[in-house]
Amino acid sequence: MSTLADVIVVGGGVSGLTTALLLAERGLRVRVWSRDPATATTSAVAGALWWPYRIEPAALVAGWSLETLRVYEELAADPAETGVRMVPGVHGGERSAALGPWARSLRQMSEVPEGLRVTLPLIDMPTHLHWLEGRVSAAGGSVERRTVRGFAEAAAEARVVVNCTGLGARELVPDPGVRPVRGQLVVVENPGIEEWFTRADPASSTTTYLFPQPGGLVLGGTAEVDDPRTEPDVRTAREIVARCARVRPEIAGARVIGHRVGLRPARDAGVRIEAEELPGGGLLVHNYGHGGAGVTVARGCARAAAQLVG
Image (cartoon, rainbow, N blue to C red; front, side, top):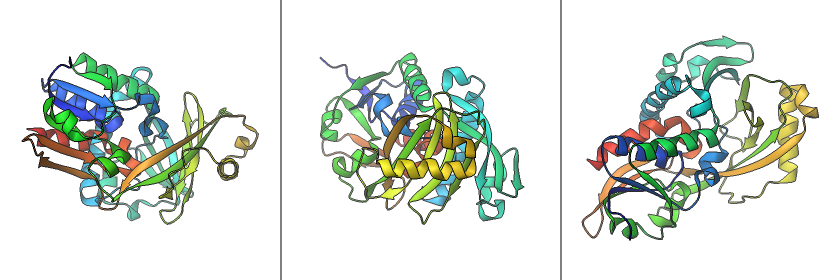
């Protein structure tokens, strides 16, 4: 027999776990229902550098992002436990004048010939997701493997349901505005690179980035809209390595140790944080549509969603 809860959060990625943590820390009885283990979610595939990338609406994203940044800066005091490190790097081709007012809040930022040099949170997602699950449990919550076919299932066991299903919201809500943006990565043995680099063109389906993570150097990437393929493409992998090697030539000889593909949960209308009544009288709170920046806005969006729980 399932234990009744005050809140059931559907979705066990970074958005779901962060929302569940804030609710559990308020003293609510929280259960997280996730079809997949955290290490198999889209969040686990993320690079994951803090930066408001491919996410709307801009007017709200800035606040959510900065709130999350401050939390990551604190968590970076214990990277082995939280997975969060503050790492310097360069956004190729960027200039501070082209960014929004939020960029003035960034620390250790300067313009260099290549672009914008700044120190930002770089998160090892498997470690961070494990840490979040542990924090939820320590706060009295639970994380359960369960496939949800409709929010009524959760509403039968809790007065509030929080929808953090990411791409799954397309069918569950249903919301046809939710679309996959395919991202492919290559992981190679790190030849000694300690700083990250990115160069992204929002109008292109290809990006170039390299992130030094504990498990290897993560190379990327792609941003292929409406492409649901989850298997790595061999030609794409070769192109990713070649682009990154033009930035750091030593990458050309690095041994490939893995391939990753994730489907970013983009939404045409941007992030949805909104509450609605369920037919049986319960409350459904939405927190989805984070596109390529779920890690960047995780804490800010979780707080906004938690406020709607009441």
